[in-house]
Image (cartoon, rainbow, N blue to C red; front, side):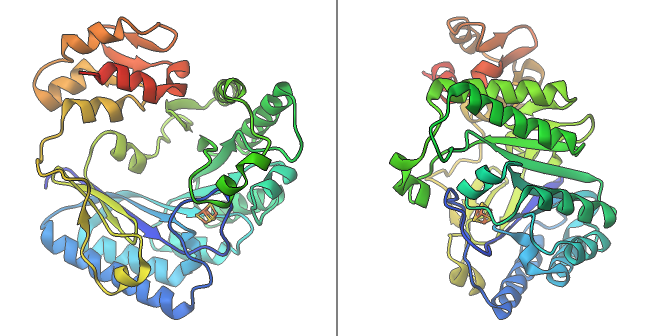
Length: 380
Ligand code: SF4
């Protein structure tokens, strides 16, 4: 495998469950479970380095869950093992963290082991919104988390915010938009290098989905206005949008996440972690005990071919602001974007999509309807 891979480590532990979250994570786990989990991750790093003989990694990402719960020592052991087996020369090494946790010692050990990027789950800077979201922290904790990263020497800091947060009382559309713009503006004022702005989606089997009727959520039209207004605010503050939900200061695009949309290889380790290697997709099941006891990953879907289809490529690339380019298509498939996609693109209003000699890309309004537009482009 010549191209460097990305490594994703899913750390499935949280202090408490947020009512909107459907990620696989467990609460109330003991230190000995953390040890067993860490050992399993290190064992698998060795095993995969044998299988992918010679593979190097240039990104390592600890996501979750709440990876900082593992503590600095275990995280450092995992980083060292990844370095032994996959090099990690010049790698981007990220950890997700929640404000309000005791982060200084963890960030310090993480940075000493080579960690150089943190992603902080701020979600909102409005105390009332944080309460509705069931978050344990307050707005001041976000600033403290950033300070903790900076004092550990980590400058590459990302902040997550959430758009379309339910309000405790019914609000006018104008007020809902104002709240989202305020959140984007507060995040930008922190002068972090990267901001992710996700629209809240009510996922099945979460407390929010059970209480959906009681939540005061923006209408679909207001949600669209919220997204557009938040994007404009982030852009006004100097962040460039490079993906539907991601914005970066110049030079700070997340290299790890880019691998997903560019169909570059990545190895996912941990329960519920997905991989894409050598053209094949597979994942470890969402079961901590099975993961610790060494269960094998399972293939995703019924895919047996290693060939990336044009459709798969277009679907992922259209999440990016640069879209699907003729140059990229040529490199991947040895021919430019087929005419049929241009024909279909010409039937879609230009407020949603641009198709020119460079390629095809969604505009901001197109991002809002990306699933529908992509389905129309790919409809054979
Ligand atoms: S802290 Fe993050 S991963 Fe854990 S429950 Fe909340 S949103 Fe989900």
